[in-house]
Image: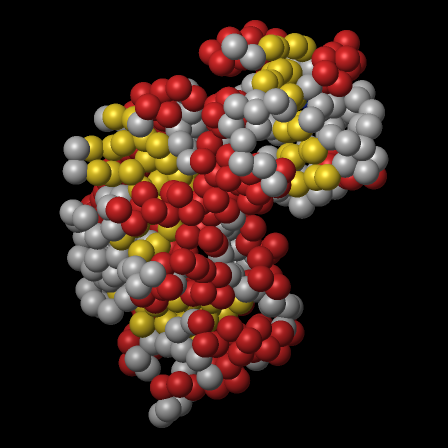
Length: 499
Ligand code: ATR
């Protein structure tokens, strides 16, 4: 079959609004879905005109509340609306609805006959807005009552394992003869990899209306097309990705996907959110992912899932890159290389011999930082809320450690050439520094410290803003991200196209 079609779901209040939005996205889509249940009541009476107004093949859907829609009136008025929309077929098929969505339990033979007679394809749908659906093949078989309908199952996975199961079942199905969607944030891979789902189409939402269907987890067609290069994904496309939880903020897909065309690589980089490392690895194995990045909170636990790791991973105790090499899954840590390079650039120093550094935090990210600081020859003190974690890291390198609070002000002063912030405290906070978003709120900057935060969202974290106001040179984690990404890219490229 050809690639899966891209369908834009229209949930505007008027037909004009829907047409305007559809036109904006027309270069990125193949089909629009008119969600009649979102239209104002008066507008619903005019839907017969919509296909000719929009000029794009249109799927007619009137979704009931039980299936996740907003149509409240009874089945007889819904039937009337369908009849009104499908009647008076035009000799130009573009003026008729190309598709109509009838739910599995909606059986009105006269409407089915009308659809058939007028060349409107029936999508026979089943939705479970709360749970995953198992035994897809048998279920689809039951739905394919007439042989000329496209069965659709949209369900809500509870976790990544449910999505993996769906991909597994889908791989046994004929390509493009059904529509399969795993909804919600866990289901995102099913939308981007609709081709691997053997799905006839994938649904997208316009950015302007995305709040209407937020819980479904649809992405907008421009992102699908320009970031994920959806139309180029085939069964030969090499898949890479990133896993973590909750995996809300990640710029990795943007960075990696942008690089593939420049490098002449047929590849795609997808986010796959996982509660556990076991689920992440099982998904990667089933999909045939060749390399993936690992972020919070899985950088430590992933090590147990891999066949081997480079020595740096063992030393740091954290792994942010897994690559599927000939001998199996191998773990790397590029955070360390990325941080080292970014810090050299920020300080303008090749080595940090003679420098004293405060490292704030002792989590997974801190471990790579401590290793890099040690590598660069500095002396350091690790500060952490949980002191035992600071001790455990510091002891490996012969560094000092201390608690993270006002009692440690003098210690920070003693290690204040460079201050590196590695905790998640200021992440996403745009407020002025306070005890909730600034892990060293109690420390007054002299103005001579060089302060780097490994967080890059927001661009200026609360502690950075405070340091900058005091005259300090500051940097965020963007360059670390960029350089670690470049190192990752090289590793991924090494297994590109391998079987
Ligand atoms: P990462 O892998 O990104 O480092 P992590 O392992 O969860 O994530 O570590 C988070 C770091 O932020 C830890 O140093 C943590 O301190 P604890 O070890 O005491 O948990 C620190 N951190 C998170 N929230 C914090 C808070 N509210 N106050 C102080 N430190 C905090």
